[in-house]
Amino acid sequence: MVRCLASINAADYPQDKVELIYVDTASTDDSCEQAERLGAKVVAINPQRPSAAAARNAGFAVATHDFVHFLDGDTILAPGWLRLAMQAMEDSQVACVFGRRSEISPQASIYNFIAHHDWYTAPGPANTCAGDAMFRRESLVIANGFEESLIAGEEPDLCYRIRSEQGKIILSVDQPMTRHDMNMMRFGQYWRRTTRSGHAYAEVGARHPGMHWRRIRWRNPAHVMIFLVAIAMSGVLMSPWPLALWSVMIFAAIFRNAWRMHDRVGSISGSLVYSAHHYFAKLPMTVGACSFWLRGLFGRKPQPLIEYK
Image 1 (cartoon, rainbow, N blue to C red):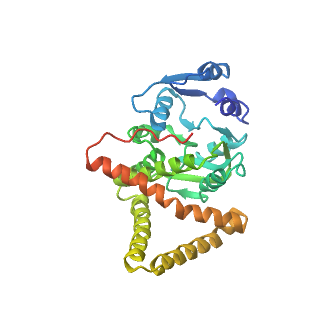
Image 2 (image 1 turned 120 degrees about the horizontal axis):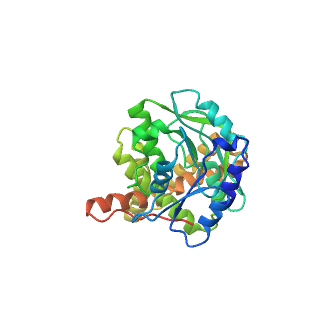
Image 3 (image 1 turned 60 degrees about the horizontal axis):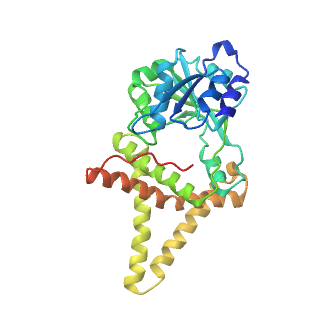
């Protein structure tokens, strides 16, 4: 958090035009005092069901400027980004603009490496942003902010509503915006984070049947079901061939995707690892999606926040 606020203070942008706001969600250390020392207005909240959406809405509620830039506390702002973002906002059709988010230490673990490439969005009009982005205040007001009932996927939900209801543009700019400190070192963290993504695909996809997540929320369980059918057929037929055929198809798909992503990832080995992640991740994503569906089916309480750190 301290690095994030310090990077905003060091940005190449007139500081008298910056309103620095820190939202604290029941921290037990001296985060609020440190934020105040760095010149931030502190907003402390303690919602019954914590979420990033609730924190962002709390910060947005006290902001007074026409443009609101959200940053996660584990990011560092690029010095020249705010000027570039404001230039993009000169187009009145742009409701949200974001740049490149990259990991501080992508080589520290395979999970950091995967996240580093997960952040990529092609330049131009986009479907959604991630947690770091600048929004036009007017669009946030019309959309009534982020949906606080969501434990994840709050940005795709908001961006879809802005695009479909306001006809505005979510713009991706091919310039450095933030560096992110994923600090993910254990498989359990990766599993929980990916499970949360699956839950988000299912929940946000159910809220908006017309959005681009509609196919994804069914595609992941379909892949897992095919795998289970292959195992079952091998068992029933007492033959390895059904599972062997599935394996050949998966490896062919991994190599095909790795070839397509080679230029962006930068190496054959890296693109193979990242492509393999796309297929392995379908399992925990399906677990997350099924959790959402089963909770709805049996009338259970909504899923609490899934933390991976």
